[in-house]
Image (cartoon, rainbow, N blue to C red):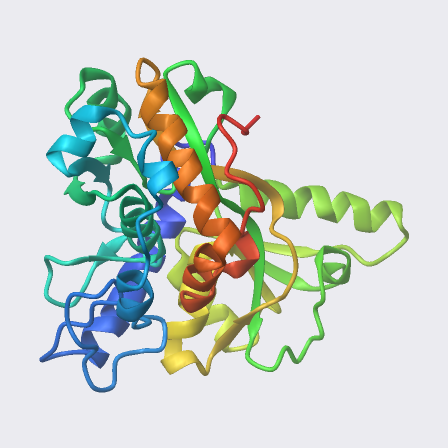
Length: 321
């Protein structure tokens, strides 16, 4: 992943701006809420699914809810902080105030299993860990990588595996099936990201295998890369899994790009953050998420948002490296 504090760096932020511009244009006059608040607007892109019935149908798991610390059960609420600008993870609906995204749906689903409401609070990514440590919030969920470095500060319940994904033109005219088929192709990345580092490493592997080298084009923005891919100047873009999925489903109403199937490259887990002094809450959240995985609800939420490639089979505590 990129080496900045935020997992998705500037590549992600620019992709979000592009995706949200598409969303607002397609859904002007309405307020689609895939998490169940409002009816989807006419013409809303397929990237904003209607998961209202799915979330509403989740039943409290008495056994799991019984493990929740009393203060949360009595309050009927937990406070969760996020950085609401990362489609499709977590962002605002067209009304500018309703949180939506697959992370928002997962948080609501976890709350339903525990019998509590999850209240979202928007804040700067750099404030999330300190807000947990100070007790200002109970949980964080913001596409934050679970790493050993961060585990020294907070605990994590892992809920998703992200990594580098290959995005190509619709129909995949260059027949790219994975990293090895990038040899001899023009590939676009954003300067200074882990995507650029991977492309350079893959170039070396192509040379060792006696195959043609990659031509790596490094730009300042994902928007530039999309334009190059659309016009055929490059055969593929390297991006993070959720971002690539969202762009491919929204750009040109889903007619411009597609994501090459397969496991995320150099993948690592995203984790729900919990204060290290609050192990009982972390364990309750872990149990609730595992219950959602077991009954299939977790998979349905990810599938609705098109990010099922990042599904985990087990809700681990501090499983990152």
